[in-house]
Length: 333
View 1 (cartoon, helix red, strand yellow):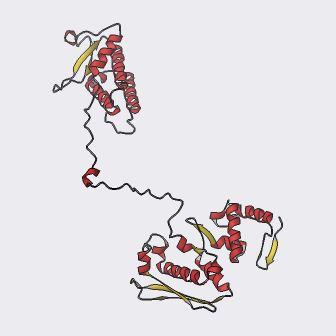
View 2 (view 1 turned 120 degrees about the vertical axis):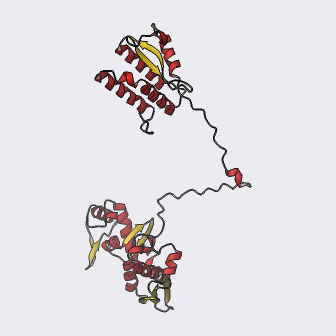
View 3 (view 1 turned 180 degrees about the vertical axis):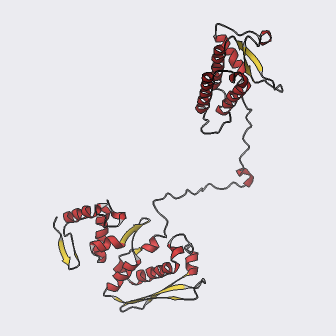
C-alpha cells in the first residue's frame, strides 16, 4: 500500500483501495480507540467524516465517536474546528450566577465575522428540566464541566453549522437514550367506561387432588399374580407391612399389604411410588406431596432396612422429586 503525504503533520490514503488497506491496518492496531479496534468499516467512515471536517485520519479517530447511534465530536475538538475556521471571530466562555443555586449557568459567546454574536446560557435549572442534573456519570462527577459543554455545543452549532457539518458534541450525545435498546411498548387499549370492569374475575378454586395410594396399590395387585393378605389377618412379627396415609379425620396410617421379606416389601414400595409418580391426572405438586406422605408413613420400616437398601430408597425418592420439578419448587422431605 502506498500512502500519500498530505502535509508535515502526517499522511493519508489517496485512493479507495489505499483507504481500505489503511483501515484494515488501523483496525489491527492497539493505538486506535477500543471502539474502532477490529472494525475497519467504522474506521473508514470515521476517516471520511474527518476529511469533511478538516481532520487528519488519526485526529478523526481520536475525536469522532458514535454514541447512542449518533455521530458526534468531542467538545474540545469542536472548539478547535471552529477556532481554526476563517469565519470565526472568537469564542468566549464563562460562568455567571451563584454556585450551588439553580441560576448558576455556563455562558458561551460565539462570534462569527459579519454577524451578531450567538450567546447561550445553560443553567442548573435548565439541566434539571432536561433530567440531567444529578444524573449518574459525568453530571455527578463534573457538573460545571457538563454545563460548559452543553452551552458550548448549542452556541457553536448555532453560529457555525457549516463548519461542524451537523455533528453534535459527544457529551450531549451521551445524554440521549440508546436507540439500540428496545423501547417499552405502550398500552393503547382504551379504558372501559366503568373502572370496575378492569378488575379480573376471581380464579376458580380448584379442589386439591392427591393420588389415592390405596387405589394405586390395588391396581398393582390386580396386575400381579399374587395378592396380599387382608391387614386384619396379618402377623406383624412374620410379615412386613406397607402403609399408606389414612383418609379423612383418621390420622393413623393404614396397612394395605404385607410381605414375607424385606426385599418383597421394597419391591412393593417402589412399585407403589413409581405408580404415584406417573399418576397423570394429578398435578405435579400434589404427586410430590403423595410421595412425601408415602415415605413418612413408612419411615419406621425404611429405618430397619440395611444401609444399601436405605440408600437405594433415598436415591429413588430424590429422582422422582426431580422428575416432578423439585428443582423449581423446594419440596420438604
